[in-house]
Length: 572
Image 1: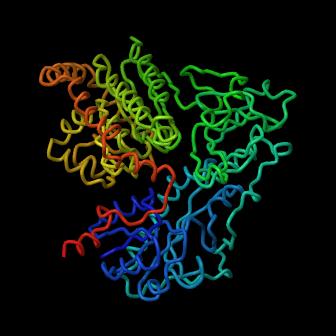
Image 2 (image 1 turned 120 degrees about the vertical axis):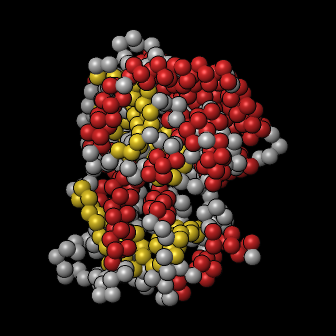
Image 3 (image 1 turned 60 degrees about the horizontal axis):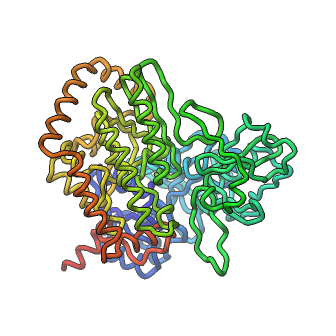
């Protein structure tokens, strides 16, 4: 079929639909829902058999839904309606939730039901649930639709609240008042739940140290209750790795990121690590609770677990963004494990939601000199990638449990063996960020896996890639089933360990041969020379693209590489 994805942005769910539908052989194009005229024009140009809306913030224009089959992906159970579905499910403590594909009509979320899938709710943030359970359930529902469409006797189910399986209801847009924290009365678990219901967007508005901020990425910590004795709830009591600890009535609540509430004089503000936003005088009075690699309670983005001769290194950075300090800290942690003679296998686990998305664009935008911070950040992640490449006395495995983009993808390729969970989405390219050239030794790591010609195609297309395609191209070595992930990972690690002596010898010889042919330092110098032009040159494309990205400015058009229907017209 010809399928048009009408969406507010090219988010993870839209990317997953594009990948899977193309894999099944459908002709797929994407159109950003900028205004009625442009959406109608896209439909007229492409003449789709089916329109799917994975992520919209407004109703589909009537001339479209009246003349075409339009399916809305709604992140709620049957009967659930309204713009804050996941928010309410988290805040109300639902133990089970779902995704419904319904036909667009004149009633918001009130159209006929084409498919519905349920999933158990995990105690986590709205963003994490959306990237995980919601995305998986949405695609299962889409598969159900694709099976039903050719059936002549199939009819969608009208929304009927008298049916036993229709248990949802209309819920209005959740406001800050609906989830406001009462610091004096709410316990830590309630506060964390409220922040999680707002995580990603819009964030939970609350007052911290006399100013209003949006709060993101929270977790409770009962191991530090000695810090809250006699302290008013809501008061900052400590800091760690960019996060702040706030007192509640029964525990500490760690909040990793804040965004200052915009004002008339400062209409645009950025989501940043909390300690980059709070007043320096306040921070000077807060103890820095440094921790090692051993797992502790509370906020800890970098941690390690030693299991015999294996070391598992976790780095769970918010949204997968790795600032200069993050890269340097992670590099020190990696070197600590690499220097341990007892460890023979280092397993790089990344985070649950993201493996890594490379350099931290928000921190770069907030810096006094974005060009200087870009330079520092790319060199720091290069140092980390180099450390992994040059580990020749141990085997290394990158385990992509979550999505990865840009430099994060290529950093993973520095490992000897790259594994990825089914459903993970890779974006192995940089050019979408203002024609950024990229570093992380990609000019060395990618061609040796896929060849020079394919490397140029992959980085030039600017499109997401599923793990099945990545494995077929040689970008990764093996996929792991999501349902039996731990068992599948263990099986792969055991197989690698059984061949460790042979693998190490081969690795050492290959590294020596590669270095003789062209030293790593040359790859890095060539990449950074191009990056220097991106950061400091006359062409401002990278800085303009970054500004639009971090401030989430509305799109003026759909990029041609996502919209073949517009490229065809331009060529004609």
